[in-house]
Length: 76
Length: 243
Image (cartoon, rainbow over all chains, first blue to last red; front, top):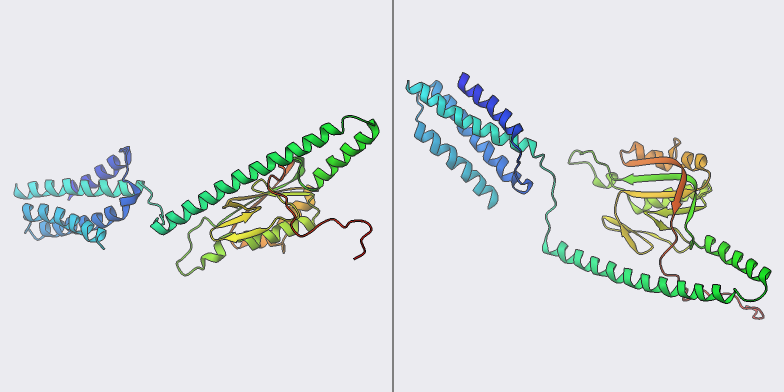
């Protein structure tokens, strides 16, 4: 759990210090993808708590979720 | 041990997610209106029309100036007093019909659309500056004794109209959008009061949430009218003809 919180803090810090941002044109797609990723992460935390965590399912789910969400968003 | 590795994987992905999220928040996404082919074509037409207008107006301005120079040089020979009075008269008339740049005390009014986001049900028409608002403000300024007026440096003359053209307004055949700067020369205290005192239209606009700022200034420059002056129907009454 501590590691996850560490990840959050590091993400916020580096994200703010990072000099680039997304092209605003794609912000809609990115935000939908972020939502899908959030879903995966929360699913992963739950799986860890239930001690059923499978890293391959998690990693593939993470990317497939994000890409599918963006794809559906682009193609209406 | 397995649990530890899983947590590390999760940490990396959490980091990635929060990193993207932060970048997204930092990017301050703005509202963009889609550009369709139709709007593009419309814009091209509009631009061409404006370019044509400009060329035509510049040409006619040049012709008028040449004519005026010719007349001025003609009057250099002959009776001094007569010429001087004639020149003074020309000056006065030029001032009257907006051919001279004028300076003097007055107010500068800035009008712009509401910048604050409203709920979806809010009628957007209450949040934008309309041609009618500008007309009423101009009228208020005239009542308060404004001697010269301009909208975005377009001088107001007797034939000037303020017309609605969708998201823009048209003054003297020049298209302009918000922010709109209205300059008025006159008694600055009176002019300022005419648009800011409670129960005036300007104050009402401000209370509605629209951008409306009046600023008193000691020296305002109002540029001369540069457009076309053409009278097709009205003509001076000739002596000896009874109508």
